[in-house]
Image 1 (tube, rainbow, N blue to C red):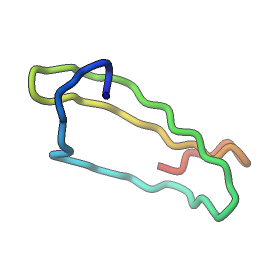
Image 2 (spheres, one colour; image 1 turned 135 degrees about the vertical axis):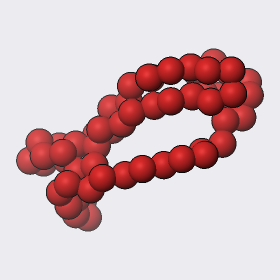
Image 3 (cartoon, helix red, strand yellow; image 1 turned 180 degrees about the vertical axis):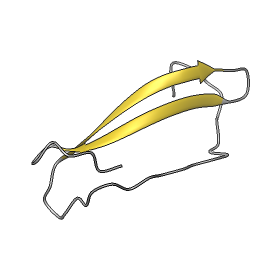
Image 4 (tube, rainbow, N blue to C red; image 1 turned 90 degrees about the vertical axis):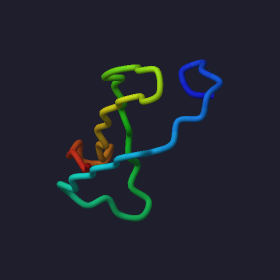
Length: 58
């Protein structure tokens, strides 16, 4: 269940910009932000950070 909603929301568009590598055994943290909750589409933004060196991965 996403955001307490019972409907299924498929991925219709996914863009990823990779900035730095994350290697095996690195710990990464993903922070998401809800941009807009529509009737049929949900817009999110996500930042992936390497916890070992605090660099943004994607």
